[in-house]
Amino acid sequence: MLPAVTTISAGIPTAADVAEMHSMGLQWFNNCGIRAKNRDGMLADFNKYNFNWRGPCDGVSLDELTLGEIGNLDRFAWALRNYKNPHDRIIHVWMTGGPVPANSNCFSAVINSSRGRGRLLHEIYKHTQRSEEEAALYWENVRQGANVTRKILGEQAFRNNFSIILGLFNDSPSISLNIHPHVDYKYFLEMQIRSLAMDKEFDGLSGIGFWGIHHATEEAVRWGFALFRHYAIEGRSDWLCEKYGFTYIPGLLQNPDFEEALAGWEANALVRSGDIKGLGSKVQHRYGAPAGVGDKVAVFSREENEYGELSQVMTGFVPGNVYSMTFFTANYKDLQENLHNPKRQPISYTLENAEILKNTRVVDRTKAGSSATSQKVRINTTKVIFKANSPEIKLIFDNRKALPGEETVLNGICVTPYFRKEKTL
Image 1 (cartoon, rainbow, N blue to C red):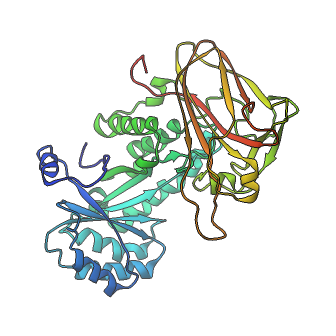
Image 2 (cartoon, rainbow, N blue to C red):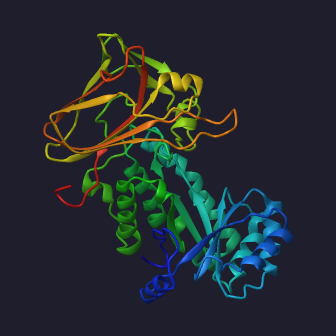
Image 3 (cartoon, rainbow, N blue to C red):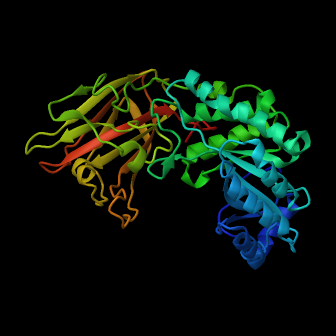
């Protein structure tokens, strides 16, 4: 899109693809791992591959360094300074952690490795907070970190060689920064990009980008690049969320993660609240989630002639507008015994006063780890896009399709306005 913005990369382009990109003023970068842990091994890897072993490219992004590991950074800096770079590749480096003055040795090596063209790609992956106020405070350390980085690099290098890469990943059970289902991740993402575009601490920032596009929903990908266009290309300063009516907490559904047991819900005798340690962080992969977040559930039991039912009347919808709903289900026994038994879970939903436009259920079938401590349970993720026909919509869950004696858990119900540019889906 622009030299200052990353775009989507999938697979390895051909020479013709690269030529076409160059005709558009674009560049293509390989992503390469930093494997060796000693300086001679790093240099040997650089010389062996010369950053050209996966086809023609303009440069490479080396993945990754941790800013707190000063000794390793110094070894890497030595190897990079001693690498001759015979193909004159541009070399960028992914980095995580908080910057400190001792990082200056590595920073200068990266920048100078390709005649001043190297960039520091600072990965900053922030997960949602319970409130907009908490989210603003949570971001404060990033603002202060930018001040530190500017002092370490100097003004010219900050403007030419320092980029911030945000996390776009929001798709459980792959990996998700949207750890609180009552929050609209789209608003949280704009808070971050807007700060990079508007706050003085980031003035002159040389680039922005995303990691995790392959772990993001289609809505998040479209929204993320819409934000890039809004702020980085068009240079606008108004809130894009205001245009679409997005807020940090939509408030359409109460108690969506069962943190208050079954408060706000109507439940029959075959639905109870439960707590499964590690469900949110280890099974659903809510990235960076504090202990306990995502562990509360509704447990559905099934008897011979009776099934569990759970419902809530959701409010605040605009008739004719489109919304999305995501929720997670899993087998209770599998969670208790850590069994690898991926299958379609027998939880069904009904949305009264709504038109279902799209419904997708994904059964996570990834292989189980071989170690005794690996997490083997796999969940279902259901995603629904629907049009509201009324300000109030009744949401009903039931397990009538379950077998007698089978127990199924439900949580992470996220209901938000859906981002679309056209009036039709």
